[in-house]
Image (cartoon, rainbow, N blue to C red; front, side):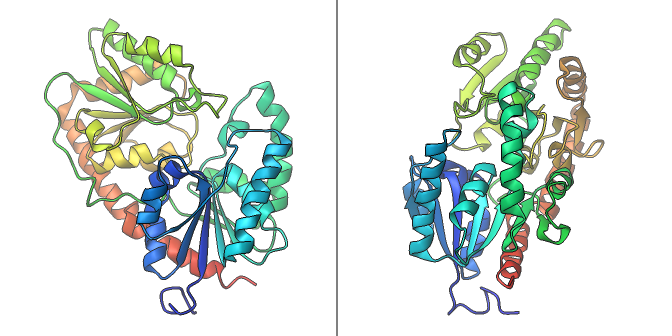
Length: 383
């Protein structure tokens, strides 16, 4: 089979469609680098804020579009589709990699009647599918209908990160042989290396968007419970709210957390090693994930994990190996698990070493990059 790697003269054009430049750099850069090294001409179609120069420095071709992320207004949605379609007509991609739910719909509709194969990467199913709010319940049937339409196209394939999401996509009528599972985008294990435990008080860290769905509220409650038990554990909160997401935590609530004893709100952190060098334990009490990058990075740095027993989290947090799992939305269960690790240095070290080994063998950027490029090559043979 001819591949991008063995047929460099063909230089197939690969276009990533992603809402924000920072998300591409944070979550898709290792696989894009692997594609570039395999001979693909990599293009990035995204809303550009501060990451444009970094994308172009990688040798990727950047196509700025004004992306109305989170908007449900039909005119804004149509504007996104038209903008992406104009880029497709100009660059003539062989393969389009739509990253996440909204780009899957927008990028797929933009490609209607055009020849590129499409890989729709669904890293979790998002607020509309996980929330029980009235807004989510009203939008969900419309989004399900759109997904059935775009994902069942003969030129489309779906990339998921865990078995639960694979089953969910299969329930939409997508053939099993067009659903592929690759866990995440890879961890740079040469940059993220095991770190010694910091001195001082036991500290846990949460890294992620500050959304209700991420379980940050139960975590703050668990931290208070631990203090009341006489086992104070400091909490670092790294990340920003996401105003485009209806589940975003209000700014005044976040400010209130920062005033509580033992809690430090860091906001956006440029180098995640700065967080894990200060923390003993990684915590993610999410209600559902695709494959949480924050836990992969924590494991790479040798940190034990406390997480919820939900899709995505349990792919990285293996109970009794590198993690303790708890039910979602349970501050008491969270506090129990955190307290167990806080009191047992040997268990922390054992889990940390096992987590590092797990990342090296299953989630390294090199392995994921090879798997993704192999999938790209396979999709190029689709008729």
